[in-house]
Length: 278
Image (cartoon, rainbow, N blue to C red; front, side, top):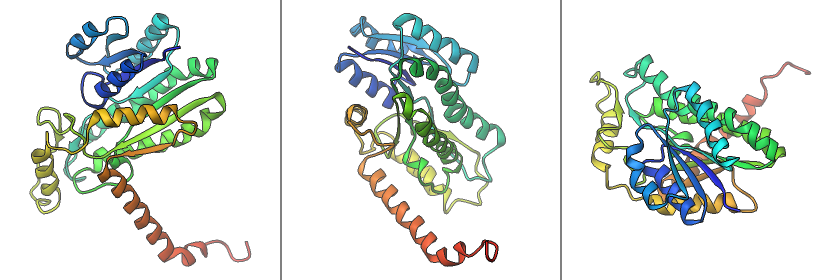
């Protein structure tokens, strides 16, 4: 039986790539986006498999209604893909409360609301999968990406607990950590940026230039990434985390080595911080 996918941010990038892979596999896709016009051609090409749904994931009341609508249309949601998102560049000092809260609304509170909305249906059926589109920035960070990585770290921490909570109900959780893929994430019209103070030109300035110069030249192929996401979901053992791209795999493994080195260097003294004789 074909699966029913509910994919946010489905109009472009990874959301669109995963939607196309799911359709190619014979599945049904409800693609959610703030502006559904970009999905018109996709819907017209696959009218029996694709529906567009207007949704802003930061509108928590609309999230609940959207999930209820999809379940009413198709009877179930087999795979939720929390993909809607955008990047942001700015030093921690440069990033305002409003900018930070907006990112958390989009990358954390929206996905959390969608998870809460779909889980009762998945638990009742004792099956389902939740795909959390994180980033290599959910495992490590760099100058200028503090706010963005902060949201992805939060998403990953929540998802790790979620995976342990829902496993007994036959529900899978997959955290996807892409590196640099040729999506519109770095498009100048979409990428957020805090005003520059001038103090961080030597660090954050490099990140700002990288974002501007690499747009459209990223090495990662979203179609290949989408195919691997489907393969991971179909595997007998679905990994909790799936870094995507040579840069992401290298970065995550290097970061794990760094963490291990930090812990090992202070291990003896860190272990000896308990009460004497306790």
